[in-house]
Image 1 (cartoon, rainbow, N blue to C red):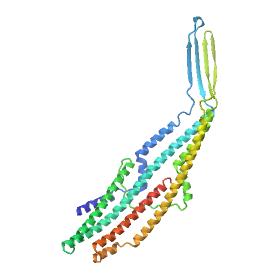
Image 2 (cartoon, rainbow, N blue to C red):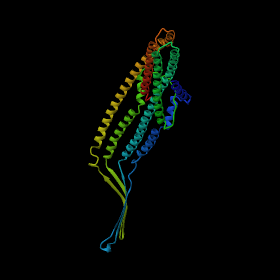
Image 3 (cartoon, rainbow, N blue to C red):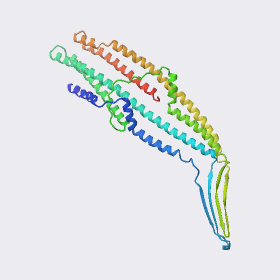
Image 4 (tube, one colour):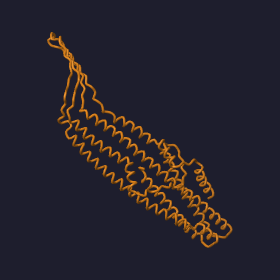
Length: 391
């Protein structure tokens, strides 16, 4: 039993001696080292370049004809032509504007992924704070249970107590040690997840106090700022603008297309040189293109309104939940501190006023209440992390 306690103590002490880092430091490291973010950044840069293609004039067309005359007396004929096609001028302006907005969307999508990974990191750190706090509490509980187990061992060896109480003290100590070991397994798994988020580089995190974060006093006013920072809503606003530009672009593509260039024709004894101009009148090629673009605009506007409403309702629900959890947590803190009987129970046990079973029952009630308080604090901070995702 003592070997188990020594081993567990080494785990706790070893963890506390490693370099501990705060959440902001870890977030900065994850931002720099996360392989998913690195890949997303490269993909975004490539996509930005892709959005800049197809904005310029079409390639010029060059043609050369060499025609043999028959009969031979009329000689041969050589034709040369160079032609350039032009869309209606406003089409190029709209394409360039759409390209810039597509690139803005690329950055907004990267921002969404970036915020998602940092939020995931915050959740892992929050879970680690919870397990670190439990580790500290279990260390205190193990020390207390060890004293009682040693005391009842001495009493049993002296014939002052029976085998039942002796075994009860040893089993109680064993259960607490196993609970602590189970928490350490979870903590180790969370550190592995944090290492993965940090690009495979190990990170130690020993904070055991949840960060203090105030809830917004005026939710409606606070929501306005959150809405403006939401990359999904901003992406949809860009999509509406792009769709409207596409309406104008398709209207411009429905106008006549121009061709201009140079031609020459050489025959025996004669040469012809000059300019060539052509006109392409779209009749069926772009049919329904404007209608489609206009319908898509309405669809995106509807999606944006739906997302905005859902976003508001989600944040409102998170805010309401956080307020309730905060009130519940405050009640637990005040009352647990006020009604903590640990010292009195120990005195009563030492003076023989309580049986060992009664002592364990009373301590278990307090331990369960303390764990419940930690669970509420963990849940509160999980809610706040989601609430401030876009702040």
